[in-house]
Length: 150
Ligand SMILES: [Zn+2]
Image (cartoon, rainbow, N blue to C red; front, side, top):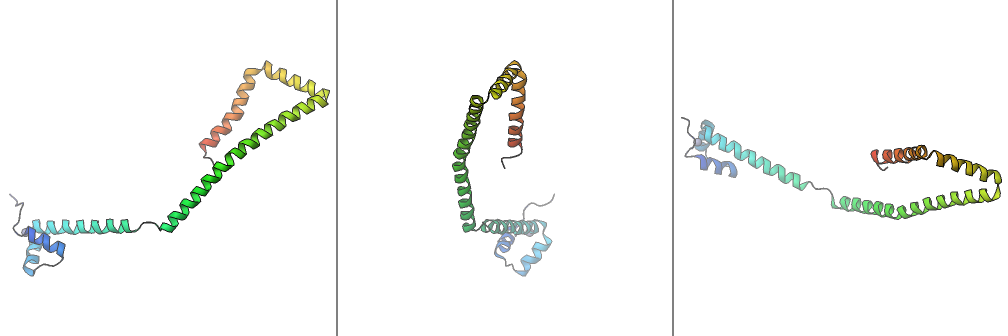
């Protein structure tokens, strides 16, 4: 049966953590498997603690973190400001197209007849027009969200 304890185990651990040992204790640690394992584990824990302290000490520069937060806040504020402007531009464009159609309809008889013919065709093929409109609107929208917003 192999021994699981050694009478010099505590002294070997203390010497390993403090970094100094008597020559007789060093000789014992080299020969005793229990004490050599205790010293190896103590050195491993000390190395791990040192590495975790080093990792904690390498935080990013606070001025860089502050600058990046400022840039991000500015970008988000810009996006928030641009959104209603874009909605207003789209609504204005739609109103302009509608006004143009009304003006052309009032001014030209051929435009009225062409518009009424186009309206009749659209209404008679409603399902086909709805599918085409859905494809024209949904495919770019799906691509926009699938590929990212930029
Ligand atoms: Zn020992």
